Length: 290
Image 1 (cartoon, rainbow, N blue to C red):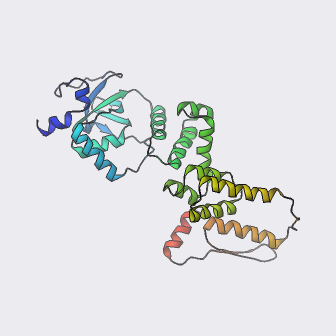
Image 2: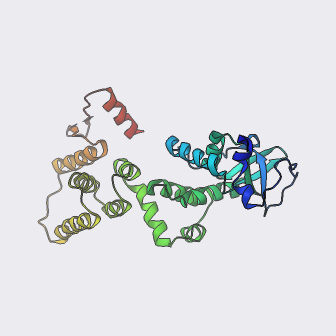
C-alpha cells in the first residue's frame, strides 16, 4: 500500500472503503460524510482559539499518519471549491502536517451568527481548555450572540450557577487570571478569591495561596477568618485626609503590584510615583495601565 492510500484510511475504512476517486458532489448531503480537498478549506474568522500546542499537533499528526482522520470536521459551504471551518481546526492543522490532501467533513448551512455560536460552544466543551478560556468564550456568547445566562446554560448544557461561576472569574485581577490560565491555581481557588470584595485582601490571599500551596479548603477557611473579624464591631476610625490617602495608596499598590508613593497638598493636587527597576518592569506597568 503506498503512502497516499495509507493516509486515506481511517474514516474511509469505517464507511466501507469509499472510492477516493469519486467526484465531489456540488451540493453534498448535510447529514452524510463527504471528502473534500484540504486546499478548499479556510479557517474561520469566528474561531475563538488562536493558540495551538505545536508538540500536541505533531503527536496528533503522527496518529493521523498511522490511522487516518477518524472524526470528521464540520464546515460550511461557501461555493463549489470553498468551505469554511465551523469546528475542527486542530484536526485540520494536524491533517496538513500529516500530509493529507483531503479529509472527511460534515457540511452544514450556517450564517455568520450561527458560525460564531457553534464555534464558541464547541470551544467551551474542549477538555484541554483552562477555566479562563472557557469564561471568555461564555462571555462572548452572551455579548455577541445576545444570550441571557439562562439561554446560554441551555446552549452549553451546564447549570446556570456553573455559568455564573465561570463568568465571575473574568472580574478577577490579571495576576490571578494568569495564574489560573497557567494552571498554578485551580478554578476552586479562583472562585473562592472571586468572592472577596477587598482588592488588597484578594491579592494578599492570592499570593499566600501560591506561597504556602494552600488547598481550596485552607483558602476558604482563611477567607472565613477574615470575614469573622470584619463582622465583629470595631471602633470608628475618623475619616480624614491621611486615612483617605492611605486607602488610595493601598489601591495603587494592589493595582501595580509594587509599593507606590502618593504626594498631595491641601488642595488635593499631587503626584503618584510608581517605581520600576528596569525597562521590562516599565513595560509591564504600561501593560497594566492599558
